[in-house]
Amino acid sequence: MRRALGAVLAAAMLGCRAPAPGGFTLLFLGRSPAARLGLASLSWAPDPDQSRIIAFDGRLHAVRQISSPRLATPMAVAPLGPTQLLITERTGEGVVLDTAGRVVREWDSPDVASLYAAAGGRVVAVRSPYYVPELAASEPDTAPLIRLLDTLGRPIGGGGGGIATIRRPALPPLSHLVNAGAVAVAPDGSVYFAPLVRDEIRKFGPGGEPGWTAKRGLPGPESDPVFLPPPKGSTELRLRKRLVNVALVLGPDGRLYALGSEDSSATQLRVDVVDTATGAIVATRQLGARPGAVAVDRSGALVLFDADSLLAAATPAAGAREPFAPTFALPDLRGDTVTLATFRGKVTLVNFWASWCDPCREEFPLMAALYRELDRKDFAIAAISDDVDAGKMLAFVRQFRPPFPILVGGGRMKQTYHYRGLPYSVLLDRQGRVVERIFGFGGTDEFRELRETIANEVRAP
Image (cartoon, rainbow, N blue to C red; front, side, top):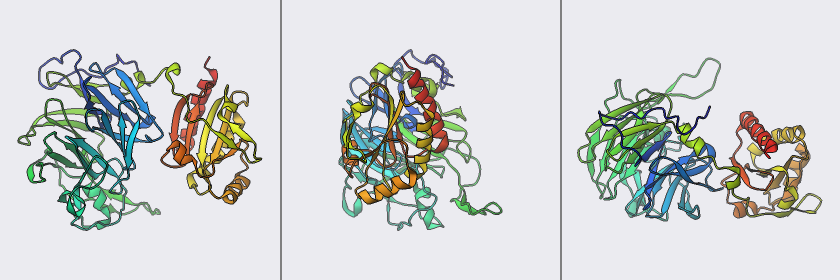
């Protein structure tokens, strides 16, 4: 259950110093790195569960938040210049926003899924530790471990631009897992890389030259992931792997902070503080099983907060909600024009779908059940097809016979609303303002939560 902001799990610090009041810089929120940006020294962090980016001030009060159809599941934030944020999406795309929330640019992942860091006008990309396919296309052993990109997301230098080369595992399809990891960039261009499944943190100089390699001293043997026999009567793929490093960030004190695990499954977390000149680990702090919010104060003390409390305090009041935009005026299956204003006064789920979208096929029966369950005077669904082929759209409708209105987007909706994939839904309150965005299909559990959210909105004055 979420608690008030004052419910801080701990304000203990490394060493014996008492933390200075205020002046906190957020390092990690959950398992994601945060970024310090701007003259106001705000700390920006991703909230992937709510598809948003949140800015915290020096007291770790949420003072801004950004949501957008471009932010489906943001996993990391890095500063890109004095006024821009580089966001890593779970699927590996890079999204650049300004601090007003405007999208500056996007780019596709150079790997199956990438994680980005930036500093001093330099962008680096590594294989993401937040989305790791169990099997991926094999890569040559000449592939770069760390890719160098310009601020438009394009490779720098010959051969695709890169630092070091990948580690070639005994089972080549596991190369993405073996070479995934956390990354951070210093203002002088130095790069720090920490593999997800190996006990090491490596420093590379501005020119890519190898520097120190630090180990966190975890007990037990180190080995590449291997396949395990499937359970009896099952074809499930199982891997034995050791999860070590999750995230890296450079603090305002110039030290490197490494979020990692103490056990092979990353259920027991810890933070190591690393001297960037020598690679020496100067302090370690155990976090326990539940990811929290980790900050550093002005004296350099490491302080822990309850992440749920910080996020709960960041929930906007109903009056601060953004209007759904752009509005639409689309034909229904009879050719009559239906506008967004048609649904005003009702809590409305605007759903984007297409006949070729397999998760949409799974989602439609649950939407139909939700629509039949709730009162028509309070709740509506506007299901907008993004099919180009009208025949396939109509075949889909004949198969599922949805009880809610179907609107015809004609293949233009993604360009208009900039969502990442289908299905994509936006829940609106009675005034047509965004309550939440829903990316993809999360199954019956997601619809159970959605039903509760809708009920709360229906009851709201």
